Length: 257
Ligand SMILES: Nc1ncnc2c1ncn2[C@@H]1O[C@H](COP(=O)(O)OP(=O)(O)OP(=O)(O)O)[C@@H](O)[C@H]1O
Ligand SMILES: [Mg+2]
Image 1: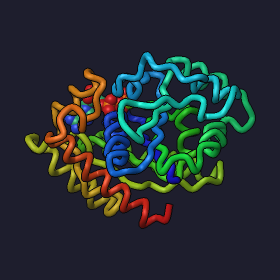
Image 2: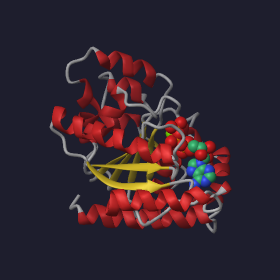
Image 3: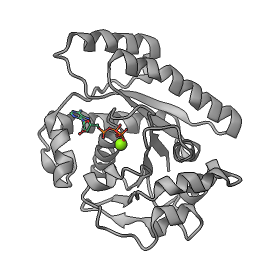
Image 4: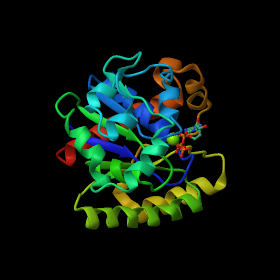
């Protein structure tokens, strides 16, 4: 059961859109998915129309010691796609964990209890290097890094890589970068091809072949609580996320997870 965190400390790079639509695409391929919304903004939960849906125990309480992660799971409208809804109270969890021993390993131990029930666990992370994000990285076999092809975002990757190295050394975990995913790719702007070229020549095979193009349908779907496959299965967005799912499955197989 590979666990994959969708991580980038930079905000608005398509982490949530990627987490929900990649999860949905993999579920459509017959795998069972648990999507964990770790972000206090609860965007993944809202995007899937699950804001009003209460699990028997909320994620913040699970992380603070009340019950197993399975108690925090709800079904979605889609077969095989289960969700641990987020909560604004995750901000408090971030603070509460700060003074705890083993604070970076809480999610890892909770995810371990659902091992076997799911083919994949996907974690949507907040846009910061907080204790929550560190928990996600520690709990993960892989990290997937969405990046918008502009110079500042690509520069930010150096910092993110050094954070991952630090986590690896300090906490003795070995999450691999499964892929750097170009998102919100707009070929109409001249800078895009230039930055994509730079990204590919710097990070080589770490960059996924799949590029997620800018597509208004991806922006509209969350307003209807729908995945891109329910909202517009013929859209470029749906096509791109189907391709990404295929590539992610291949990369997981190659890395034996
Ligand atoms: N391929 C795309 N085409 C068009 N719009 C997109 C695309 N991907 C993401 N967006 C839009 O860009 C915005 C940011 O996307 P998203 O919320 O997924 O980013 P994020 O990295 O999760 O943000 P945050 O860091 O705040 O959690 C959203 O309005 C989303 O609808
Ligand atoms: Mg997000």
